[in-house]
Length: 206
Image (cartoon, rainbow, N blue to C red; front, side):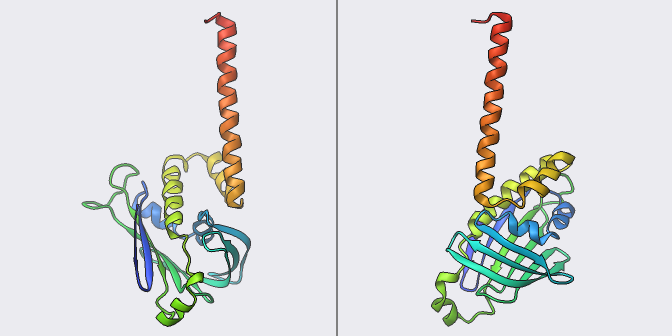
């Protein structure tokens, strides 16, 4: 993953492990894309008509609350989320084919996702005055998307995993996700240790 910034925008490039078509389909779910960001603690999300939503989130990267209507614009190569209020104009998700091919498999040359935070409709003087409102979560978001998409490429064909990620994991706050992960890791460790103890007792291993 790589990150870049210029005066009115910042972006990250993410290797995904998905074909361009699969990644394009993934980008049509704006709520999922936003909730994957571990710096966003969602307080409210509701539909406001076709392609329009209201969200209120605490941005843990700068301590500011984002409260805005937003519009989701599907694109031939991804999607664009346009914010009606706030310093940030939009976030664009653009799917790029892998270098040297179309990348229609889930291994090898996979598609690249470029995520761009656009501030271009806010004058530079205003951006400087309101610098504390700049969203600093993009790099974290890029890492979160990279990890999620790699898991999606591997496990999305497994129905129970998809159900868990959409119905249980996605609505969780970031802190709850971390606690759940630790509990699962501890449980697996205890099961492995328990199984080894049973084998030692059963077969008399020393």
